[in-house]
Structure formats: C-alpha cells, structure tokens
Image (cartoon, rainbow over all chains, first blue to last red; front, side, top):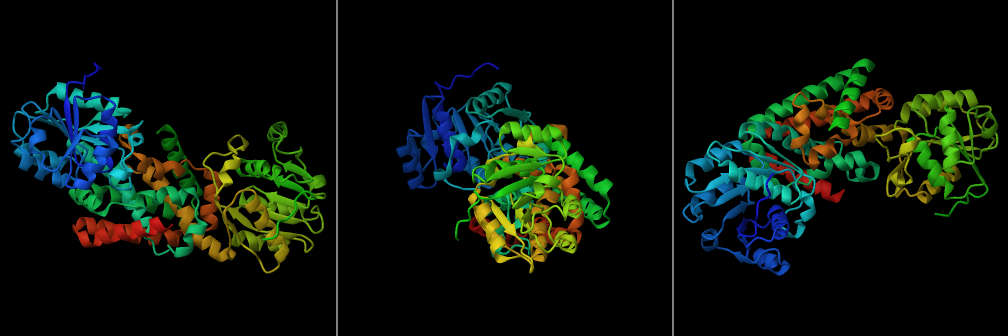
Length: 285
Length: 285
C-alpha cells in the first residue's frame, strides 16, 4: 500500500476519552501539520494540552473543523449523529471524517441522511476497547497488533478508504478488514457484545459471594475482566444491535445447552467432541 | 505461621506433567533432603532429571515411597485412587500425602476407604491450571500469587494441614483457604468448571467462522483462552462434579436470560442495573 503523507494534514479528534486520547498519542507520531482536540470538558482539553498530545483544545468545534482535513470522532454512537447534524456546515470541503463506534448499520444510515456531499465519512471500528474510561486511561499501546474494521459505503471514495486504512496501520493496527455495515454488526454481536453479556451474567450469578475471590484462578479472572463495563456505552451498543445480539445469545444458549445435556447424561463422546472442536478452533485463531 | 523446615524431608512427586513439573521446580527451592519423581514415561523422568528438577526418577514407585516423608500426587483424579490402592502398603509410616485434583468430594470419600491409618492425606487444589499439558509447559511462575484450597478431613492432623499450608505459601501461593470437600466442589463448579463450559460453548457457536480471527478484540481472546482444553481431564472433572456443574449452568442461564430479556425489551433500567452490579463485583474482586 502506498504510504500516505500526514505532514500536510490538519487532524482533529472529537472526544478525548480512552479511545480519542489513544488516537491523539498515536497520531502525534505521524507528525501532522496540526493535531487538535474537541471535548465537552475544559479540564480534559487542558490535560491533553499539558500532556502535549494535542496542539490546542476546543470546546466549540466550529473554528477548528473549518481547518481540519481529517476528523476522528471518538464519542458515543448517538452523539456522533448529533455532532454531525450540528456541524454539517462546519466541515472543510473535501474533509475526511472517521469514527470508532462499535455499531455501524443504523449509524451509517443516519449519518448518510444528514452528511453534506462535499465531505467523506469513512466508518471504522478499532477492536481495542478498554474497561476504563477517560483520558487518564488512554494508552497508545492498546492499538498495537489489534484488529480494525472499516465498513465502506457506496458513496465513499476509494482513496479516502485507503487513507484511513493507511492511517490505522501506521499507528499500530495489524489486520485491517473491510466489511459491510450489516455484516459488521452481525459479527461484532458474536465477537464483542456476546462476550460482554457472558461476562456480566457470569459475575452476576447467584453463586457469586464476597468470598469467591479466594477461590478463583486465571480462567474466572479472564472471563470476568470485561464485566467491569461502561454501562452508558454498552447499553447503547446492545440496544442498537438488538436483533443480532439476541440471535447470538440464542445460538450460544443452544451450545451451552448441548454441553449441559452431555454432562447430565455422562455422554463422554459428546463432551469430548465439544472439547476437541473447541481446542481446534482456539488453536487456529 | 511457624515456618516448616523441609531440609530434613524426602519429597516425591507423582506425575511430572504441567502441574507436577511446576511443583518440582518450586520445591527445589526449598532444598529438601531429597526430591524424586514418579511417572509412567521413562522419557519424562529422564527429562526431569536432566533439567535438574528432581534428583532421580522412578517408573516403579515402591522403593522411593518407602523413603518419602511427603508425597505430592499430580495425576488425574481417578488415577489417584488407583495409585493409592496399589501403593497403600508402600507409604512410609507417618508420611503426609497431598494431591492437586480439581474435584474433592467423591475423591476424598474413595481415598478414605482405602488409606492406611498410619499416613495422612491432606487434599489440596492449586488454582493455577494451564491449557497446555506436559512437563515442557511446566512453569514455576504459574504458582506466584495464585489461590490454593485445602479441604481438610476430620481424620487429618492439624500439624500436617499446617505443613501443606506452609509449603504452598513458601512456593508462591498467596491466599490459602480451607473448605469442606462439599463446599469446594460447589464453589469450583462456579469459579472454574462453568467458565470452561462457557468458553467452549462460545467458540463452538455456529456464528464462528474461519474469518473470525480478523474481527476479535481482547474480550473474545480472553473468554476463549481456556477453550483450548485437556479433554480427558476436563470430561472427568465435569462428570465427577455433575450435579454442581449442572446447577451452576442453570443459574448462569437464568442471568443470561435476564440480560437477553432486557435487550429484547429495550429495558435500559434493567440492563444498566446488571452492568453496574457486574462492575461493582468485578472491581471488588
């Protein structure tokens, strides 16, 4: 892939939370012409400035958007729609916008309705979420070796898709794939939302007691790490992807039911077959 | 706790797999009078000898058991019963035996029936399992900071329970707890067997495809790590603890069902309540 040059680009990050902050840190290394931040909190902007990860922060995005060649929006999905609606006349003509939202189908449809023709929105999803929220937990390391999904739309220009692909590879993402927004949401319901639902259900089981911490190993610790969950963000993600997630939960319930049945019936052949298949799949991952 | 002295003790490890091997490495540091290994494979014994983690290996345990003050049995639960039955007249009078098996209730009952009065069997469970099997994956680091459960029986001598507690703390285990065998099996069904069932069901879902590897993040990776599972060992653990495990699966199914219902009904209050409770529990773990 041809290397894009970012030294002639003004980049603005909208939302300096754990993901936006990591983007700022990572983009800094590409030495863009200017790197700016927009946030609702003065405190966060001041902190980002003093950390040196942005050149300047803005509470009001109007002025800086007019000068930005690239806008990376790192806020909750519903707020993205509000942001684009409010700022649709503030984007620089020819600007490329991208996001980091975990659901795509409904979002892309909403955005397309309101987006001016002279800007291009390339939707993206870094598979590098964190349990903790806020700039203080932002880590540039989170992106290294992680997966990235881009969900191109018909109206996207190929050169702009390539620009974003190039950008995320330059900041450490390893595998960058393209999926339709519909397929993205189906797959993500399985690979991301279902695991979160399982972790929450596991730790919320009635079997949980205060003393349980003395009787756990790495398995329980690993499976419940993501039970520490941003409730605002994840309830929005779950609801926006409701049908896919419910379908995934039901497919999971079937498999768990099969294991339960094998245990109940002391059906060793069935249980071992399940274990062998699981081992095979995991080792090839 | 008073520090026990191991320099006057001959210790024998039965089964030099991933757990027995780690015990050998760790016990070496306590400088016992002698440290020996028993295994079914000459190759494994030779390897352990050449690694210097045992003084000598034995295919036939008879001779070395007669000289061993402490015997650490690191083989599959059912094989433990066979081993004790075959060797009940080979143990040194006054010897302390311990095991590392993941289920306790049925095992302790079986062993008590056949164990001579002049030896003491202190049952234990290191919460430090590994996905890989075999001496080549044994790691002394696995024990550091991990939990240990001891399930004392009425016939155990307090000084011998303390000896094992002391031993496992000396080799790196952090929290050493005592539980009845019944309670151990109830808790372990929740903290260890259920997570393994969930990991297997997740990766065996029909939603899994070859391409899924490009669309996963740390959450899916963490939740499926233990899906790479020793099928012989874990089918035995699942079957031996059948009733507790089935009960735990059903309690989990209830919680997952509640989450599914909240998603279906777009019941934000219910979903957020689940997320907040999960976050609270995880952060206190």
